[in-house]
Image 1: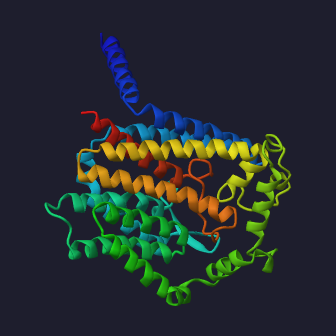
Image 2: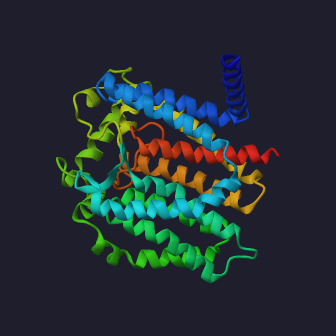
Image 3: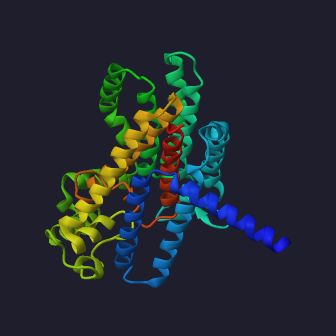
Length: 371
């Protein structure tokens, strides 16, 4: 009898999981699954057909999809309830990094707590959730003091992340918060004035940049000034992209890739692998999948019932769009190399998990839009 009850309980849970999955936005799920398949194909080539790395990447993707489904079935009220706690925990993690963080490539960005995590990636979630919760609790149009408070909530993690140093992730965290301010009603004249002030502050900002960051910006202007140093990444990336032509050289046939001309080919410069082996056509397929995700996410934002859901969906969508633009811009030589991976295609543990959690939130908003 006990065995039958256990079987019935398991069967009931499986049905609940299947029903929960079926209720999710099928367009977003299909696009994410397609990107996951492309990820596995590209990573296998980028990692020189090393099976161990492929298995590791596949495990991260599988875990990410499970977390996506879990997050998609968490109510927005629960997100609001945990917003402040989650924000505080991520700030504590960023502080602890300076004491116990793991260093790599001259930066201290990771914590080892059984597994290695990058707390700065979690801020891409905690900052917009915290701000969306803060402004949705207001019963009136935000005033200047509310915007200043919100800016403070953004600058705390941004400055801690920039200190690691990790300017790329810091910019994305900063942007995710500023997008919330924009969607809650920040006036255009304030944005324009802020942009002018930022432009005039460039000499001051330049002074606080690390030497390697200054070098990357100068190299962007003229990559040939240091072809074997800071300009090497950009030059080799552009060569790989151009050599793929329209159809590409064929899967696993990329010479720039497999002769190790491309640094960080499995993370920041993974688009070079895609372009060389699958050509312009392969890049267009990925861009189309990104466009589908962006358009669908904007539709979810438009249909949202309350301010919290609306501004959170807007911030996630715009941050994701910026994520794509920065990576492709730096690989093609239009932007400085700031260490931003390509969403769902680059190899990455915490980054992939956070991206899936973000889309899990969008799916949760879409689910609640139906009721």
